[in-house]
Amino acid sequence: MNSNDAKLAADWLWRAWNEERRIDNIPEAFRPTNRAEAYAVQGQLADRSGQRTVGWKIAATSRAGQAHLRVDGPLAGRLLADRVHHNGASIRLGNNGMRVAEAEFAFRLLRDLPPRHEPYEFNEVIAAIDTIHPAIEIPDSRFHDFCVVGDAQLIADDACAFQFVLGEPVSDWRHLDLAAHSVRVQLNGNPIREGNGANVLGDPRLAMQWIANELRIHGPGLRSGDIVTTGTSVVPIAIEPGSRVFADFGCLGTVTTSLV
Image (cartoon, rainbow, N blue to C red; front, side):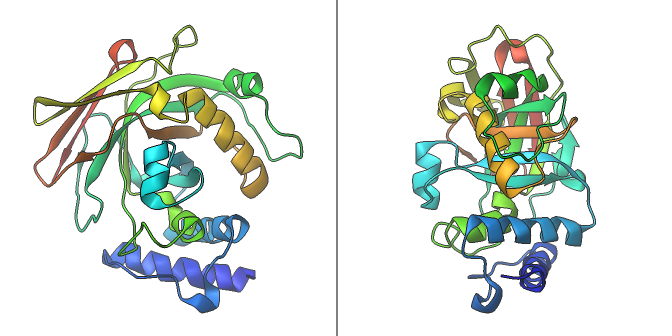
């Protein structure tokens, strides 16, 4: 795949995004076949959007999520500025095909973790984090059957990114056992789901180490100020227009959104 192929693939996906329609596959003539090609398309897609990349999302951080998408490991996608919302925001669901909400631990970076040859160690990544935030992601895919297209096409399509709601920052979090930290979710005022940080690659901090190393190879790295949301801590919750989602992260705060 050359840069023109990546641009053609990004244009194909961007049209599907804007028209809120589904496609079967990226045309074979310019379809990415590996992670390096996929992230090149994803970068072109962000450029095509005209929006600033303000952070990153991680998809498929649970075994169940990986099995559902039929991928071997997590996938990284970009958070685009116009798709990141404040706590309590209303989000237009539109022609969203996934129609689920996910309660996630998110982090804001204090300093850069740039591309480099040597892998990032766990403590090095944790030291680069500033605040933790409760968050809700509303994912989506531009593919009719996102469970069969494979990791390269899913990454190219921004790892199922759609809309994201960011809760308030918490600075005093390092003493917490995030793997054991409970998350409770209500739908329309009714308790519906409970999970914990262990559902996110065993610990949301391990997810941060994973993406730091993924992007040191396949991307621009992580930058100071970036938000990273680490994947769902609960089984995704079915939603529809009119749904109200409330996620309680205990001492880390709450986050809510309404779907219209």
